[in-house]
Amino acid sequence: MPKAIKKLRDILTRREKLQVLALLVAVIGMAFSQAIGVASVLPFISLVMEPNMVFDNRYLFWAYETLNFTSINQFIIFTGVVMFAIVFLSNGISAFATWLKLRFAWMNNHRLSCRLLKKYLSMPYAFFLNQNSADLSKNVLQEVNHLTSDFIIPVLTIITKSLTVIFILAMLFWVDILISFIALFVLGGSYAVIFWKVNSNLKFMGNERMLANKMRYKSVNEAFGGIKEVKVMNREPHFLGRYSRESLKQARLRSWNAVIGQVPRFALEAIAFGGIIIFVLAMLLTREDARQVIPMVSLFAFAGYRLMPALQEIFTSSTKMQFNLAVLDRIHDDFTRVDKTALSDTFSTEKLPSALPFTSEITLDRVTYYYPHSSVVAIDNISLNIEYNSSVAFIGPTGAGKTTIVDIILGLLPPQRGRILVDGVEIGQANIIKWQRDIGYVPQHIYLSDDTVASNIAFGLPDNKIDRDALVKAARIANIDEFIEDELPYGYETLVGERGIRLSGGQRQRIGIARALYMDPEVLVFDEATSALDGVTEEAVLSAMENAAKLKTLIIIAHRLTTVKKCDRIYLLDRGRIVASGNYDQLMCDNELFRRMSKVKT
Image: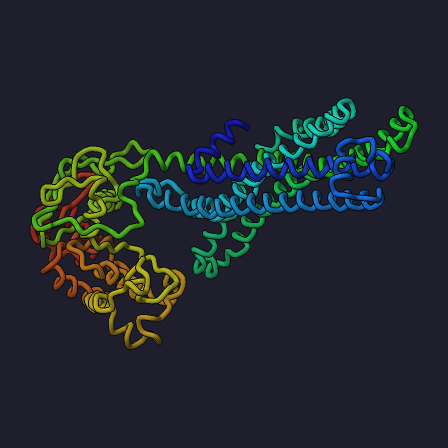
């Protein structure tokens, strides 16, 4: 458990640690007030049973005299009111401390989820190549919630209730050490033995619960992500069944944990009740006078009323913590891994820096790249120059390294060896965002959010920051402006549906092209960007791109060689190496592989 607490400390900020200390002060005050509330029972009940003790007890007599009481009954009523006020005040302090505890926990849940999302977003692109997006979403949206409700709150509860138990027991030990020790041994020992018995299964079950939750998210994401294929192929039962199995597994594991946390309470309440009866009988046998027995019984009964729920909550919280250690381990590992490898200097919520000057050439100098966990070279010692305002294409068979080399140029994949230079300036962590400000990127598969056309073109900008002139200009170059203005019911304010489901493939692709053009970049990168366009639309877009190429540098990945016919230079890649380069006519004349590709792809 100390290791778990250390991990929890690792993911808390300095401010949050100070908040925990402030919370502890409130908790100590709560525990002390609870003990005072319990302790107030003994003198009050004793006074009720033996009113004349007011003259025998110097403290009571001092209060009686100082407050000018003339009747013992009035004084007893007064002490009853004081006792009630003490209990009421102690409960008020407890309620306030509980509010502080829960507010800290859920505000911390908000901060942790935001920080975890920021950490994930700050990770280099290569990190996401080996991650499942559903798993990352689950961690941010649900597992942080589990960490809060089933680990952080239980930790705080254990601290709170342990202090309450300690203060009340200290008071009871002061009154009667033997009976207090027996009560602690029976009740505390019973909880400890039960926890020891189930402890070995709790962490294992927690790991299984987390895995089942991951598979639930994965099943739902895949079902909705491929809904068209699911409907056409009638695969609904498969995805429903897969989700149902994992959901049932998680439900059983969570209910098992909940039962383990609650069942001991019923047995131990019976033990505590029986213990009070035995205690009464023992007191009567040894002290005979009921007036001596009743105050002590009342004290221990009221103490039990406070202690039993506290011990139960300590036990329940301990089982929750152990069951959810896997959540803490995963989130702690992700925070730690991100802290070691994230490109923290390149990620900021502040205003983006200005673009890097680009007026001459992009240089790849002996660049080599291996994908994580792979021994096969993706890009092997490539050197080339891309001149400003030129158009360059990368072609080759599947797996040749075309997309990889473009991802390196985009700054998404840092080369393991070699350098990328822009106008002689090496691109690295310190200036990568400045370089990316120069680039407009059009992927093969365009992601569209469930938002307006305008918001999808000006992707990631709030509505009040969208430049309408730049929006229309980009749409016009992408040959999508007439469709937007003439055919969509609300023009640029029309909702496109989730992932652009209300648009055709070609329309989505042209919105993606408009998005790349919106910021008026110096470099346009097209990764199979015209593959979803029909012949007429492709021709229109290519014509617009040719006009843009007079002022832009174009980098194109293509299989359809008609797309690259007018490029200034074409690089033919195979197995991560450049095997030929030249313009379209030169390669058709000199290279057999290029000729074969032209017959297949055009």
